[in-house]
Image (tube, rainbow, N blue to C red; front, side, top):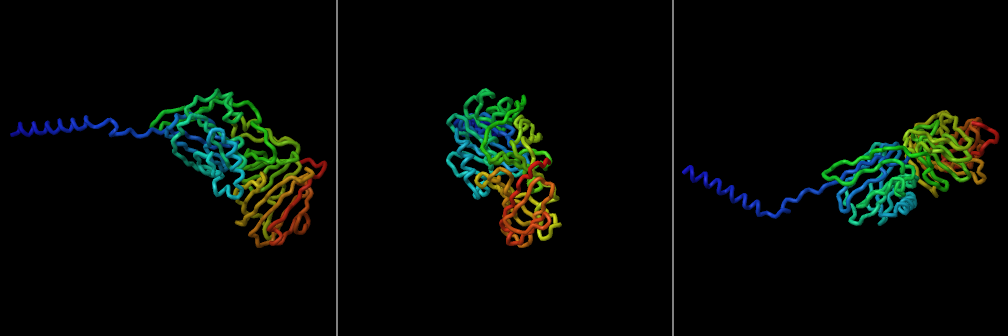
Length: 385
């Protein structure tokens, strides 16, 4: 009886082995492999990885981390479409922020929306079957002309010095995420050398850079205007810090990848805000609390948005027609109290206003007047700041 049971047991094992061997080899498919690429948005309007290689028809997980103190996104386009997508993003106007500055275009393949500082997001996609160079770019206003890279699909990357698909200043660095391995392997960038000083491109003013600037918080924005005028807007303190004429900036250290370097002013500073804070609400001695809310481009000029004690202010800065100073246009649409604009006699400029009354170097505006007004600042001759 015992022998019969043992034989029966081994008979069942034999049957199961036969059935398993008879199954087709693709009855248990192997899980798709995924290549993971990590990219960081870093100071100086740069991605830390400016190119990477993948196979055609491959699964890729791209992770973007914003380590800068300004907003950034990442958009992957069809080959040769980077500039067109950047220009389309600029034309979004007031819809830009709602759309994360990603234009609804067939030239856009995949995208990661706008990330605030210290945010991380990812996308997973299947690369095209068609080999080629697929650009990726930050389309946040003012960033796309320098902040970009290239995804090489099924192609060997060009020698670094000849790679026109990456920013010029990065062509002397050995920065590339390697092609290939599966099952979640990570590919990271390894800088080998530093780029030689160079201005990476030429632009027609107005345009802006997010760079570290002297005598400003780390959240400074440098803006180049026509008439060889420029200014430093401090997003950390929500104010125009200073303005200069004669050139723009020497950003050589930034182009070399030194994220903590300062822009060097080219020209002569003619205005410097010397007040505790220029805009005051209700009473001229009231220093408001401030909060930066971003900016939008209006005919390529940035209009800054910020809060004073919770009240939204818009400020647009343009050059005077004769190049002798700046015109600052303010909008405070929901204002319901008096507004004061406070100046200092040694800040380097003379003032005129479209509304309000000047009282001892302070412009007093009614609640209605403050909803829309402009201040013209004309350079004083012979003043050195």
